Length: 303
Length: 179
Image (cartoon, rainbow over all chains, first blue to last red; front, side, top):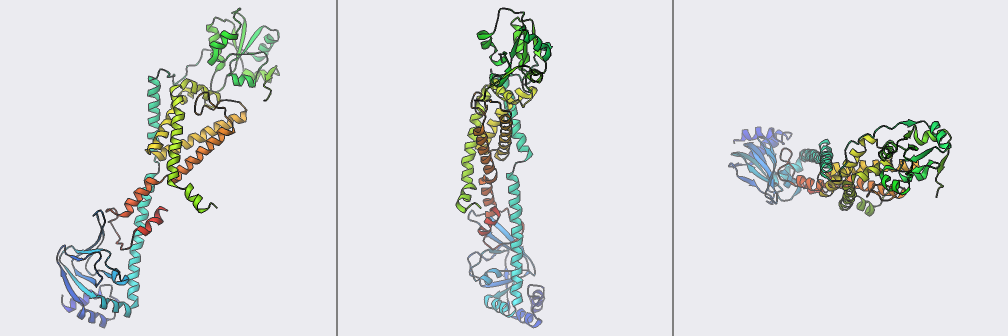
């Protein structure tokens, strides 16, 4: 590299703002170095003794981790520089520099570098700005990576599909195989003739009809038609055996008690019909209609 | 404001771990009796008088399995984020169903852990709310996995090679991201 080439190089480098005579001086005094392909120009821990400007070729800056993985920080090319960080901080090298091809370098010694920084404060500002650029870029990368991770750690719709899908599949399969399995869609109990509240009241007041409350016992205890018998379908057999009048199978029976979740009245009525009772009817409108008619009910005295 | 050490304890990932195991095993335990006796569970659900008859059995068969699977997943940390959300939604649903029936004034059994079991009441409401608090803690602070991932990513190993040299120590800035 002759002096003219050096000067042209310096004019297009970070020193571009330096006065012409300074550039000419530098072109005269800066040493040159040729690095062979794959040559290590400096390594982590080396004393910081020089600043480099690349005349031609390429230099890779990288660090090595404990686990021997390498991380490339940057690749520098013609007109670019490296090696200033350690010179500015006064610490040993924090990264490795390796030439990728035959590389021609301009080398400023520590003393030359420090004099330039001292004489041209604008220069150090340039370096700081450059380093800040790296920091910002790094910050951006870290943020992006973190965002990807955070997003991937959240739940996607697919996760819900898996969780619920596995549950439903296992539930249906187990229910199918289990001896305790139940039919998934409950069969509607057979229809039973109905009787209106007023007509039922009529028969009830004459003592002709037996009123049966088919609700579960805790509901029955809360409120029921006065004198009614509690016969929920779940405990039908036991209660029937224990306390149901069995003499007259043709007696009038009025069953009530159903909710949105269960047609207790129809179930109990069906069971009574199976036992041979012929005159079983469902109270139209249930307890509500009965109460609305102002007919007698029994409520639990609150404990 | 919450003071330092207490805040640290509440937001701790170790607390998350403990709560995950606790909540997960509660849900697994609660599901077992219902899975083996779906008919009784269906009756317990019917007592709430909220689920329509057509869907009663379907719900009584599926719900315990959702409890089992989410509880299990929560403990083994497979799809645990989705699981804890599902558990949270279930708890909110239970809470609403219990409160509706407390308002109606019917003394029904909870059907929470077994089909016979305790009656619904403020105790159950409180238990549910406590478990919901567990869910919130786990949802927000069970990030152990994430921490590990972030550590390995930020620590090196070629994933950040694309741009930007950085001779600056990375360790110091890790915190600002994972905070």
